[in-house]
Length: 256
Ligand code: GLN
Image (cartoon, rainbow, N blue to C red; front, top):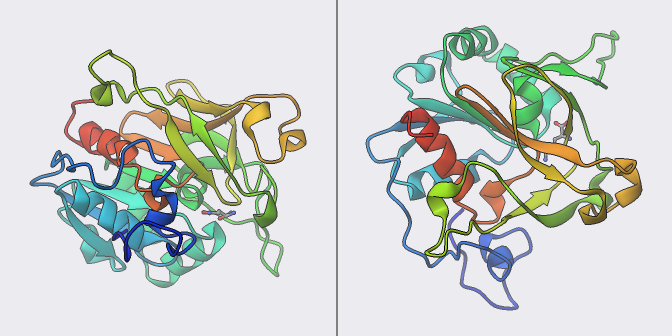
């Protein structure tokens, strides 16, 4: 996301500057160019794909909006954005992207999914939506997890919190500490089951959720990784947090 007119009380809610005061990596920090030379696609059917395109370009990669099967060619990695998983699934079928995308994921294309993107990467949805004919929504799959949609509650239960996030050691300061990740949850899913080989990178403790009762006293998994697949329940692309995208780029490069 491009910084808007600048920080201050006039910053629009939802803009990067709106979050700037709470960010662990300020927008003014010179960006890492770790993505130089890479072509990273962002599925651009629905949702906040522009913010992801800005995030990968800020890291020095070429960002490619993907709407057609041919646009999957020559990508080093792909991001599935936040939005509405049922709509993205439906549009992916309409644009004949679903099958080629499933094949690429199975063939090892590195993919990062945020929020709806996490749902679309999951092998299983605990509470899938159904269409008018009663058919449950489908995912692209690839990640051996079960997700529960809207698990933290509806829109008004959206919340923000700081998370301890594994795998960001590359961002450690001089004293060796890694700053927490400021995470924004907007009708996000949580992960209820992880299969073998899936690493848990972050959890929300009940006391930190906007609506603690919804967690039922259990710390809920909100970031996972398996091989070259990465998924988060929250939206680093809206806060200006760059390290989750950087982790993904390092995974593409084989450096993480
Ligand atoms: N609740 C949405 C879904 O099920 C995801 C929300 C989001 O991506 N912010 O697709």
